Image (cartoon, rainbow, N blue to C red; front, side, top):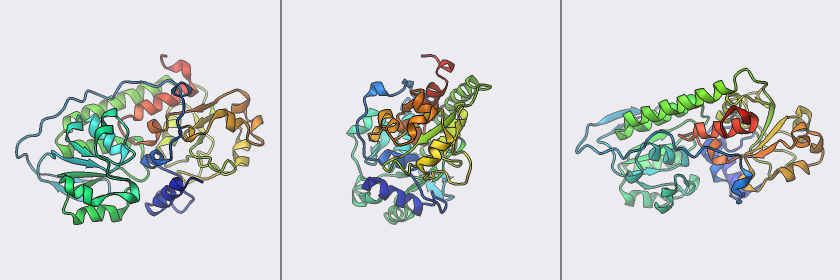
Length: 341
């Protein structure tokens, strides 16, 4: 198993993402897996539109103090609309840019790669390698952590006397993503922009789910990580990817149970005989050809019918403003005639 993945699994166990079961990357964590390039033509077509207009909001001089309760239940007072923001996760970075706050973002974590403008921003590490001295030197007036950010890292930033809010739960949902965007909007003085972004997301997600309503729900195996093909990680109830599969008109073959990121056996996958296999590990080198070559998998319906598809993991691993793009990518796989080319 990749060393980076192992570190992420341990981080998530400590962050309560596993609920006592074997864990796999959740939310932003999936973006930290070592990337292996996958040809763009191998991915299903995905929308290119960004959610909502993102005109740069102005910062009111002085401003008014705002008190927010973050996703971790912490009450945080922000003295005025922040002009210098540091993001510790790809999801919070994408929320900032969706709210038009790119010009106020002074640094991001190592795995933030969207939108393209973040490439020019300073990187401050990630997960257990955050550079606290660098963050302090940047003198931010707001730091955004994610639901999987370790509590000791949050404490260290608090000790630097920097305001920090936690955005997101270790186990996210579609509804919690709306709350996350709203929280960042309130904390940054861009509540109206956040409301527009959330409304756009709701409209798109509703339209996509209605487009597949009443259709047959094919059985789906979602491969999160198969570094060990005999024991792949997948998604279950409690993960927002499971929710996306359902909204996209599919039936998760591991939709029962109480572990959002279970590790299963190859025999269980073969016995379930999924009609579709979606490879969220395609960006890390996994291909439909490799899946078809696994012992015993040649008889799975998805393999026989050439319905093993890679997917852009960033769209479906980050609980943020591209959520509808991720849902559309899944719909294009399961019900391609339900959406326009």
